[in-house]
Image (cartoon, rainbow, N blue to C red):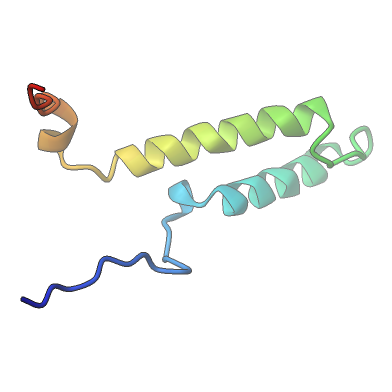
Amino acid sequence: MATNPISLEKNPKLESSEDYLFLRRKGIEYIEQMGSNWWTDYNSHDPGITILEALCYAITELGFRTGWNIKDILAEPPESPVQ
């Protein structure tokens, strides 16, 4: 009996709200435009960039979950088998 193998795309096409690196890059671009006179450190150790990264993560999580079917979100978890 032949079955189709399960595989993951290496470079899947993501929506903007699901693409962490895109959101981080755009966030840093906005910071550079608005505050480059005062803010010159855009590395991960900077507290402002850390906050930006946390925000990007939260947005990607919300973007991913909004793509779910409402039945999947509201469904009860399957009962575990009795051992």
